[in-house]
Image 1 (cartoon, rainbow, N blue to C red):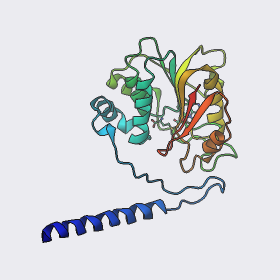
Image 2: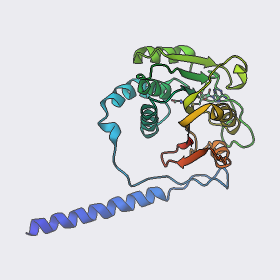
Image 3: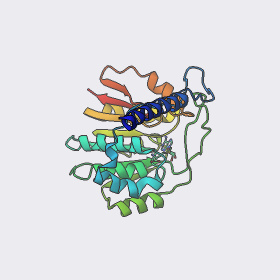
Image 4: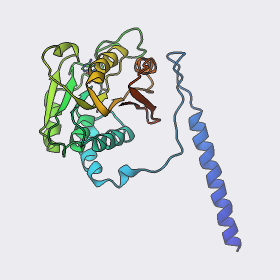
Length: 252
Ligand SMILES: C[S@@+](CC[C@H](N)C(=O)[O-])C[C@H]1O[C@@H](n2cnc3c(N)ncnc32)[C@H](O)[C@@H]1O
């Protein structure tokens, strides 16, 4: 009886301690780079982690993890969104490929889609179009990549249905690209103007139930992207702010 009581007391202490630590983390402030976009550490209470038991995801994540700056939560969401969109018509576009990690994960998730191409767009010279809406990015960051690095990763993952688009998107591809329908567009470009350019290209091409994912929404240092997304007021889209940092726009 006594030992049961001790155990209950111990568990209660542990619960309180956990609550205290989580609350302390949630109060962690960041240097405010833009007074309209406030940052504090986001620590949800959720703990369900399907990425731990999804063998297919784990296999591609192990191959791609060293080639991505995107954390496992956002990688898994990309994986799940692409999987759910397998039956939709249209291609997949990622702008902001860097070393190919998130692109490989989407490519693997889309493997069963027969008539769909994965377009992987990057300058391969780093971040473009930084401007006064952006707080940290000045241009040229994340230039530590190449087409060869991306191709090697795709080969390692056994992916062949992809095309690399090298240059500033969409400017470098006017009249050169014939994407008619998109089902998924992953925008991971870090700056306001780049995000705007990609979204304005992609949105009119999105099929019904297609999804645009902004990686940088909510990221400290990417306030420009957050501002761009907050300024959108679409009549033909549903907006979801996922606490993992994604902004998700579903075409209706
Ligand atoms: C944070 S990295 C992308 C990370 C990548 N998705 C991953 O899995 O780690 C941002 C990339 O966007 C690219 N970029 C930024 N603006 C661009 C634009 N307008 N057109 C093409 N690439 C762009 C940069 O060259 C850089 O490689």
